[in-house]
Amino acid sequence: MSKVEDFIAGASVGALTGLLIGLSTASVVGTAISAIAAILAAVLGLTKAKPEHFEQQRSRIMGFGIFATLALLGGLLLRVQDILAPSISDQINEWKRAGYTEDVARAYAAFERLGIKPDGADIISKPGPLTVLSSSTSSTHCNNLKPGNRTAAQWVSAARAEDAPWPDIADIVESSRAESQADIVNAIWRVLCEV
Image (cartoon, rainbow, N blue to C red):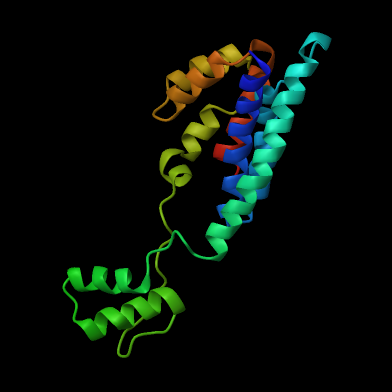
């Protein structure tokens, strides 16, 4: 890879990481990012580096640092300014399309946005959103795929026997550098099963 390609590789991983951190409000992000550190080390080429790869590492790390910082600031700006959230009028129109009157739609939009209970409504706790992680992983899969004393190749074979998304994750692990596979397996399992 050329220096430019190495810089772009580090920059793209940095941008993704920075944006995820900047947009998130969950405290679990700190845990997830620490678990992803092993994956980042593999992508940035920090594991068992040879002297002839130091220049590549510098380019990747520089790209990662610059773009992680910029994406973090961009993510914070998007989250703090609520740029990605639907407008109040969009929320009201959504309730009206569901068949509610203008007044009821406004009351429900105020409840969604501000937590103001609509008159005459009994409020019960609503279930949390179904996230990618909660919908695609289960404790059974996590128990079956706990890295433990397996080699990376054994883990890949076990992951292929599970439901989605594990076979795709097995492909990612298998396509990574052999010396980094065990670290990647441990990091992925912690991110998907311990958060």
